[in-house]
Amino acid sequence: MRNEKLVPRGVGSDIRYAQCWEDADILLAALNIQPDFTCLSIASGGDNTLAMLSRGPRKVFAIDLNPAQLAVLELRVAGYRELEHAELLALHGSTESPNRQKLYQRCRKHLSNSARAYWDQRLHLIEAGFGSAGRLEHYFRLFRNWVLPLSESRRRIERFLTEKSGAQRVRLYDSEWNNLRWRLLLHIFCSRLVMGRLGRDPELFRYVKGSIAHRIVKRTRHAMTVLDPTVNPYLYWIFTGRHREGALPFALRRENFDAIRAHLDRLEWRCCTLEEFLEDPPDGFDAFNLSDIFEYVSPESYERLLRLVVRAAKPGARLAYWNLLVPRSRPESLANELKPLTALADSLFACSNTFFYGAFVVEQVVSQKSQINGLEDTRWYAPACEPPANIHPQGRVKEGGSAAFLPQLCRG
View 1 (spheres, rainbow, N blue to C red):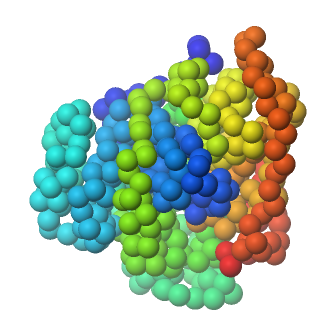
View 2 (spheres, rainbow, N blue to C red):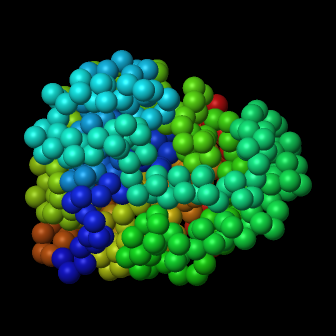
View 3 (tube, rainbow, N blue to C red):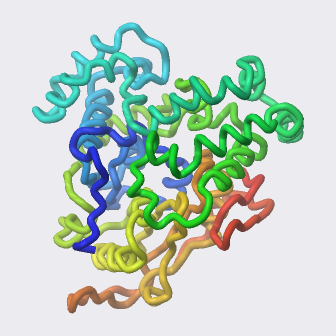
């Protein structure tokens, strides 16, 4: 792994993700965070790290190799410290507001010198709402403003974003939305070439095999028919560039605001890679939010990172991570150290509103010992837990052998 540190172009100056595009609801259900937990989270857009704070853990460490991502996290934290809930939504860009510059000025005093300098030089991003400041959000904005109108009328988009039964959504999608122009435009816009130029760094596709567009097209249909677009904050943002009440990510919901604010002092962030952090971790960890970082490295590097995670974990610790385009799950060489919680992961993934992912992986430390480069730690067995009682499986569909697209499961 030392020879394969993934540092995409623009790291240090460009925000890649101004929001977390992974469903925090299923993340929290998977990790089952308790008050005595110490957690590790990939910072990314910051909102899922803050969602973990809502559970009142003892400590959350957030790490990211890109200082621009930590500037986003800092601004979120400052918003929770200084603003009321409605003001935070305005600063984020979830709601319309002419006062974002004034809201930012109130938050400035809570920022570090480096984060303050970063945002002071990018006040145009503040004016637009910092939730739209990332490269991926820019990619979605291009889709919303230039691609979507070529295929779908405003009236048809509004119809899809109004409440309907599943059967009505399927009928509308198949009879009106899913026309030849829509399929062609989606295949072009979601191609490796266009996505690499406009949405994600081409280096992030190093281990992707096969057509990207075909998978995204299939998953989009799932999101617009099996899932309910009216309560999906991620799809709603892609189509409108805003959120609405009833379609907000976990960390931005009114009912979670006070719990996050109350535990901000338990959050610490560092600018480093996961490998660097885990080589000398400050504590043993009970829960890991690892985003989708593993698909950007080779299978060999992925295995080494998993071993480092296991070494830093407490008995029974859980790992949660996503597969976007590259399948990654515990290799057989770690069968004695990590137990896949497949039933739990499948049940939760079927409820996920972040429809573009191919799989959600949950694993638990179960081994008696972990050995990494001659370093050995003692572990003892911790049994896996059953899926939460409020998750009700009603069907199961596999895509490419991964835990993907399990339709019509619902939260109780």
